Length: 133
Image (cartoon, rainbow, N blue to C red; front, side, top):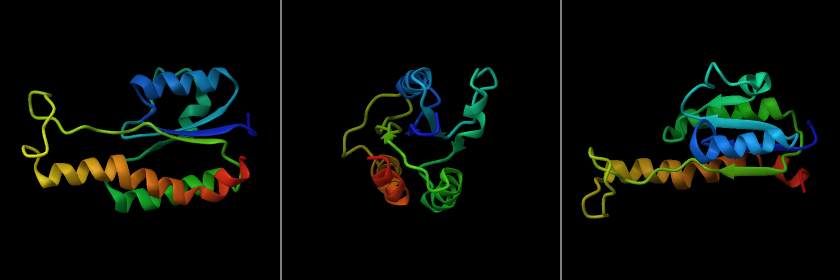
């Protein structure tokens, strides 16, 4: 498992969780990142130690978490980084907002999660990714 490492954001539910399961069942070491902790019923014991509870909106905290991630990787090669976590602006009724109706504070959140966090993550592990090729 050590020679095939994938890092996946948004791995706690939906498509991200299904993707994590697919890699895990194929023998990969899956390092997940999400806002929520690993569910207690998760059957993969390794996932509990290879999970980072990260709020990708909070870029200052992300810097610290990425340092922790680099410590966990110990210079090992990473075959893939899947930036699955993302948000789309929605109102209180869960309907999509257009750019006119979306407050700048929400756009900042969208860009932090969808744009800046993936760049920061990629930069943080670029050496590991280059080793994985």
